[in-house]
Amino acid sequence: MNYRISQRAASLSPSLTLAIDAKAKQMKAEGLDVVGFGAGEPDFDTPQHIKDAAVKALADGFTKYTPSSGIPELRQAIADKFKRENGLTYKPSQVIVSCGGKHSCYNVILATCQEADEVIIPAPYWLSYPEMVKLAGAKPLILQTTDKTEFKLTPDQLRVAITPRTRLLIFNSPSNPTGSVYTPEEIKAIGDLCVEKGVLIMSDEIYEHLLYDGAKHKSVASFSQAHYDHTIVVHGFAKAWSMTGWRLGFLAAPEPIAKAIDAVQSHSTSNPTSFAQKGAVAALTGPQDHLPQWLAEYDKRRSYAWKKLNSIPGISCVNSKGAFYLFPNISKTGLKSTDFCAKLLEQEKVAAVPGIAFGADDYIRLSYATSMANIEKGLDRLERFCKNLLKKS
Ligand SMILES: *Cc1c(COP(=O)(O)O)cnc(C)c1O
Image (cartoon, rainbow, N blue to C red; front, side):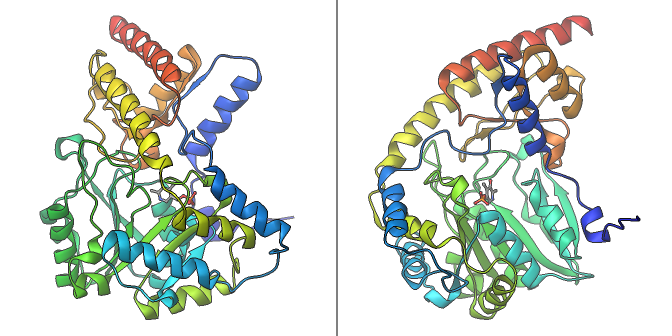
């Protein structure tokens, strides 16, 4: 039997972050003392009132199909959130609830991009973006940034990359994997250019609430009517409410794009899980007092890890201003990221994600969504690993 795989599927690289995570979990299951920095999810539990709302919905028999783009109550709560926190006015019909922020991104790309379109993606990027663009038949155009600009794309870099084929810019601040946060002025400059050139922006704002050192978030859609008209905002419940397993994301878009996404979703996944949506209503309308506690904890870990990393020979690291990642530069160790992470896992039982997965081979990604004890232990091992490396060379 010749199982011909479609070109679309065959063109994809499987997720390296998930592979590393699986390897680390397998080593743990074998009884090895592995420290995992690979996690792309909060280490806190979903707040109780959110779980209670979903449990109640189940008990009440809220277990059937809902409208494919989400229940009206949740779409309204999301529209209210955009108004309250971002100064953005959306009708509930412009809001689509999807099966995760990842699914929201995919919906946006499928609904707006096609063959011969180019999609600009600044690197280091969230590893799914280029693969989603390929799935849509369009062409990812990667623009490299480095730690010298805190991994921020400059308007000059963007200007020369835009061609008549450029359809979409994928923008992610605060960023996974670098933790960098664009200032409002920098976001406006990028947005201005997209408006001038007629390029759509998919703005992935899922880490909007996870900010440190007084960093401020501003949605690119909020600068003017023109910015609003060019932007699709993607968001989700995974990070700020620790609901990764619930599979719930959302987006807000200009009406024609929302309508197209509604059609795509109605023929692919249909609605996100009914009772999970009731939990999401509680997440948006209930108390938010978990967040300052989580932020204080992340901030402590971030400060410790950043200082420690910069004291390790061969490593340098710009500080993270958002999300829960640090993205240290390992180029002075003489190893590329895949080799570095494979050896680190083998010799010191520390799991980190090679930067090459995010389009940046001189770096590794460390998540500080893990306990302080783990961070201390893991970074001590990383220090020993680097000292040994530099001794040999
Ligand atoms: C976690 C994440 C998402 C969404 O994840 P879901 O689990 O699908 O909600 C989207 N974008 C980025 C950059 C992320 O890190």
